[in-house]
Length: 562
Image (cartoon, rainbow, N blue to C red):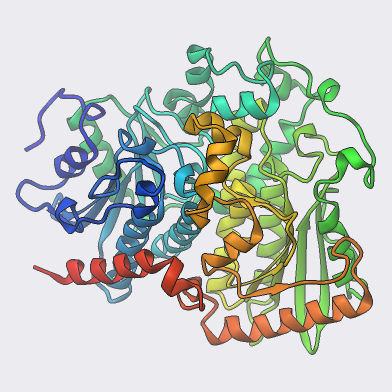
């Protein structure tokens, strides 16, 4: 029975899930008595929780078979680690299986999360990519309904995930954004965002504004009755046109939001410094603008004999088609561009324009190959320092831009296009989720200078309230929180590490070897159905992703229980 006027936000994650489902129908899967607590937290002296802060509850909503997935914001800020991420992904896999078998099951997801759990960083990134992939598939059968009631809100990679939902319901207390205020303040300075100004933060990223912008769908009162009715209304509307697929409409909005025009000036707060004055206008090749340059070097080397010119419409997104063997491939890269109209992306960051442009180029290939028996392979050359950190980016929904790229890569794989990720430089945070982590085969340079992580060290130290020295020490026992490519390789996502004499200046032989490995990756990807589950089958997976494998098996068993 729904209780009128009682707060929904004040409930725990378990209470929220149970409250939504019809009386007497709720059954929790892999709850506390399954004792799935994170050993990665224990190794860092952090007390774990037996449900790892992720609630999965199966039941009925207004008579419809439904699963509610809810994050507990009071545990590690609702962050996604290996077990919590595996529970989320495994539940979605079962939802997809049932829907594909002709048995509709509706997912309702309650977001109260800061994104990746930094104490398990790269486990969280991998899990979020796998969750995002499943959401794109499920939306073909039933609407995916998301709730952001308040308390923590929805940040980081999970804001991108949220943007893949069919409907987003928020209260005024809910917050939705990619980079949190403290992270922007750390990365871009207090003049860009004063994290202590709570009123400004809510005016910018709060539920009321997000719904008014069209970046969320429903603003509801914080009552159990109102939330229940909002979910019911969304479920009855059916499957919409998803905003993460509306490329041209949102690209036009972002172009209007460029610094200097009237729309942009209305959005800029009085205390924000001019991005043009704070960003150094340095030329490609200079030491200060080195981020993203290796990506450009490898892009040029791989596409020297391209069959097209550059297909990108902005300077930072490069795209050409090549012939590899007898196979047409589309090569994509995000690189530094000192002349970009959004200065926060001058060093190769993925920002408002880059996500939508990647989505456009990927979708173009899918549409052109629609009737072709052999689909173009997509090669994502990765050298991305991070997503863009800036007020304009958050105001105008960088999380949706990045989600559009994720959506396009996942949709392309589902349509038969192998996606080969080639990591030649840094692969950081939301930028890596948007460009790289949807790959169905992954190649990386064996280079100690490459960093793969969910956040820069300084920001991670600030958020977790630890020193950089403490973080480095913890990385000795938990590979997922280390920043180097070898530690990331342990986690099972990388198929091949390649070492060359000079990674910044590849020779003809180096490029030939890389192309051979890409061609091999295309064959392996297609043999595995272009899916992401290869990551649980690589030689390192049984050791380093054992819990991910175990949770999926246990969830499948629990799902079938009556």
